[in-house]
Length: 268
Ligand SMILES: NC(=O)c1ccc[n+]([C@@H]2O[C@H](COP(=O)([O-])OP(=O)(O)OC[C@H]3O[C@@H](n4cnc5c(N)ncnc54)[C@H](OP(=O)(O)O)[C@@H]3O)[C@@H](O)[C@H]2O)c1
Image 1 (tube, rainbow, N blue to C red):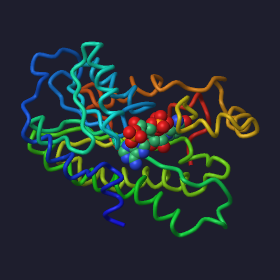
Image 2: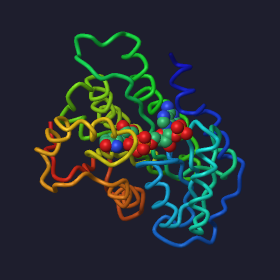
Image 3: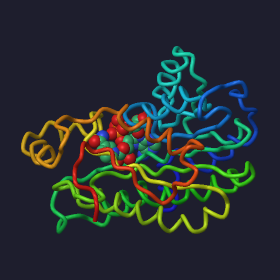
Image 4: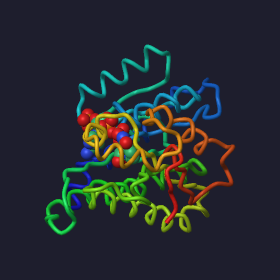
């Protein structure tokens, strides 16, 4: 199980180790994240890709990461065409970049659609391993490297489902609520190390991941019923807030969850 959490995150340990050796390529960058090195997991498309793009636009050197080399290559090429400082790795990142300042833990799976009473142990294991345990382990891995650089910023990508469960996605919803707990439990230990940790809770965002929800008319109507801004979100709706949270402007913000969900109710 421990192993699965790791492989799910594209071999997190190697990701972390990979950063350590590389000299930063963003030494001359400008913007609120100038000279920062950021790792964004699951960032070859969707929300992760939009966040990677925005962090790079704001001056960070960004390491794009996912499971498949071809996807990583495509995403890196697209961002480099925009003159952004990015590199990509299927699994390894820390050694190359001389350290890490920002982690956006964004990877998640949802292999199940159905009632809570029918969820198998295997489904629970997979969802909790990848969505929760891998995030916890990745935080553990990056913290010593952030400490060496005097601090850092961590964002865990949760979901509006943490507060208002999506119908038929029980275990996924639970995993996203667990991330809020994970963050709160890390805050105490990370604050003295000058590392801030916050959560992002997107609402319904137009990506492949949400396609099934958006295609099902009844589900879509139900989700939209709670929105105040009556449109499906775009990945770019999630990116500016992450850049802000990682910037010095947010240096007094930790242990918070930023909800980007068109005004959907979002408090427990
Ligand atoms: N879309 C929404 O409505 C919505 C709402 C709330 C929260 N979220 C959360 O936002 C995050 C991103 O979702 P998204 O909608 O942007 O997804 P997406 O568009 O489907 O993007 C998936 C990305 O994740 C990578 N990936 C998939 N499984 C992975 C794994 N096990 N390990 C590492 N990388 C993996 C994919 O690349 P490879 O295939 O190459 O690995 C791809 O880069 C997730 O945590 C999700 O729960 C999404």
